[in-house]
Image (cartoon, rainbow, N blue to C red; front, side, top):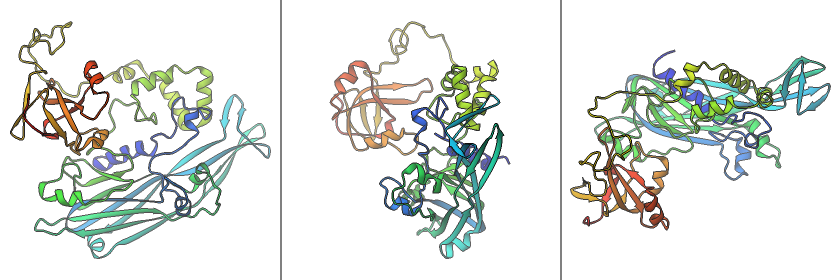
Length: 440
């Protein structure tokens, strides 16, 4: 499989295993005692009595169908699987057989459910797509009177899909997907770690279209912006794959992503922690002691494969993790190595403390009062919490690509003087600012 659908599945694989097992990759680590945080849909009865747990997720995005359009849904998630180490008839926490370690541990099995529905059918009425994943039990003799027993519970759920035509002359429709775990959990005093056996883990949906395309939620065409703003997304966020504003594939992910996400080609394989830099995590894994590596290998087969891959990583692949140049552009002159780039001696045309930028017809420079209006596209997720806050501009800067950035401090931040003294600012593009008055 190639193209956008393969790209969506590769990113989906990273979503499936994000946080599955964290460095140092052994069961005894405290951080690995609380499992599965993303896209967890609990059994409905457990979610109803537990704060912060949910049995449902919902996503909405826009679709422009052509005649005879058909939608393909790929629901993907992990099924919890308990792996028990038995010594005779007794369950033990760990055992070593012929020099190989085994640990009682919670594994996961990848599951995928596919549906194909004509768009015309979805426009007529909501379509319920129920599914069932059976539970399984197996036993594997490992020698020395020991065995591995694997157990999983049956999972049931339903994906409900509906298309609603948009009002107005431009056409298009809103696609709504609602995913629900319909399984039940009958034990009243069950802890979260136990109820995970009945959960859909890291659940996400890949939607592809034949004879039609989807619109970006981050950068929609102007006519579609009001419809995008009215879309409701709960625990799933849709992004295009294979296009910047229109595409035939959407990934609805429990982790917020930008449009057209992709796995970096330099990455040698999964490390289960997308918040870490590959190079740092690889080097730290290489630095584990032999006893620590044995404990990681005994914890989980995926951890064992990770440690083996890192141990055998060729130097040239390790060098690739150090950084890469995505593109080159011509430059003239050599920078002074010991002179800050903003020093007038290095570039007399640059002066962040006096440079200005025009925003909405007003000159904005150091000292200007502005209101923050972070955009949905290209902003840090934390910037969303600053929408509407008043700030003071501290500097106007340009990067090597000629893009302008405005450094600000929040007026209601009690540490703003300290941040100014240390040169620690928040940065926004000019179109994310609303001028509030004349510049000093």
